[in-house]
Each structure stands twice: as structure tokens, then as C-alpha cells.
Picture (cartoon, rainbow, N blue to C red):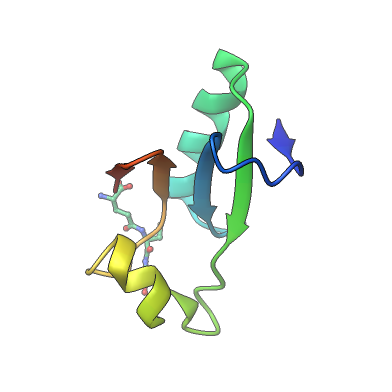
Length: 73
Ligand SMILES: N[C@@H](CCC(=O)N[C@@H](CS)C(=O)NCC(=O)O)C(=O)O
């Protein structure tokens, strides 16, 4: 269940709609009932190589789950 509140305290999931790796994380979060902010990273447009995104994940892969200071790639 993606939230649109923009609350900085909540989970953030960087994801691409067609990424099967990202599907799994979205399914797990939804099964757990955890709210998260959906951050779209368009792999076709190369957004995974943007400086902002590679700061989170230097290899430029989605998904990336951010929980406060904890970044899980
Ligand atoms: N070990 C990662 C691999 C993630 C991965 O392979 N992500 C692909 C999409 S499914 C990706 O971001 N590819 C970026 C690209 O092709 O440039 C996982 O299992 O979550």
C-alpha cells in the first residue's frame, strides 16, 4: 500500500514498475501491511544512473528500500 503523505519518517521504496526484483519487495511490504512512499526510477530512461540514485545504490539497481538511515539494496 503506497502512501502519498511524503512523511520523511516512513519507508521509501525506489522501484520500477516492470522490475520483477521490485515486485517481490512490493508484495512483501503489502503482505506485512507496511506503508511506504513509492519512488519511481525509470530504468528505460536510465534514471538508475542519476547522481541522486547512485548515492543510494552505486551499482544502479532497483529495488532500494530506505528506512531512515538504513539503506537496503
Ligand atoms: N540483487 C538485486 C538485483 C536487482 C536487479 O537486478 N535489479 C534490476 C531490475 S530487476 C535492475 O535494477 N537493473 C538495472 C539496469 O538494468 O540498469 C535483487 O535481487 O534485488
